[in-house]
Amino acid sequence: QDAEIVRTRDPQLLAGCDVVVDVGGEYDPGRHRYDHHQRSFTESMRSLRPDKPWSTKLSSAGLVYCHFGSQILAGLLGQPEDGPVVTALYDKV
Image: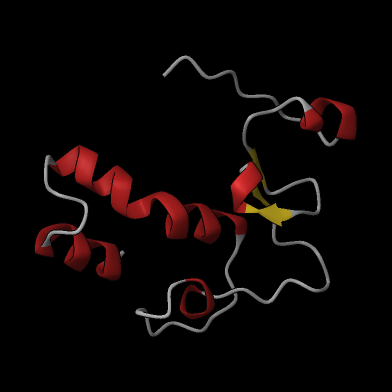
């Protein structure tokens, strides 16, 4: 809600950010780093969530959706994150 959006590729500025998306050359969800531009990156929805069938390599937006989509949908819908409505909508999106 009170987040500041910073557009940069400066590694020193990125190091101070709480969440970094689509820059930085690093995928580390534990540190909230969601970039897919490394040559070694091969993650798909299936590799990160084996209960899902999709094997297309994820973009940075796909990584964010993979990790936070259910939580966001649940909040918007006022439904439980693991409930059937959120699960169905998550899979459709």
